[in-house]
Amino acid sequence: MRNLGSTLTRHSYSANFGRISMTASNKMVAVLTNVMDEQGNSLTDHVWIQDSNFSLNGVSFKRGERVFFSAEPYRYIKGVYRHQAVKQLRADIGLRNVVFLGHEC
Image (cartoon, rainbow, N blue to C red; front, side):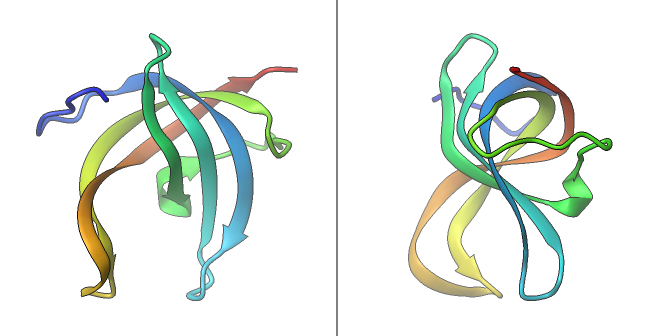
């Protein structure tokens, strides 16, 4: 996995589109699976993106379809929910400022 360091740099990625869901607080989220960087290196097996961090720009994606996008990666501590540890804590990767560029037809 690429060492992201502490700085955020926009990169190009591809992933399989999972689905759009609503959270308990009625916010839209999208899940992407098998996220890879522009060199084909695996970034993470899946990532949830909050609606404030992406825009579909009127494009609809099908489940499992390969999508291409640019984004800023960041690290966060996984296992914390509402400021309480719910399982073993570990570092994970999130994406913000996601801009979808296209998909495989």
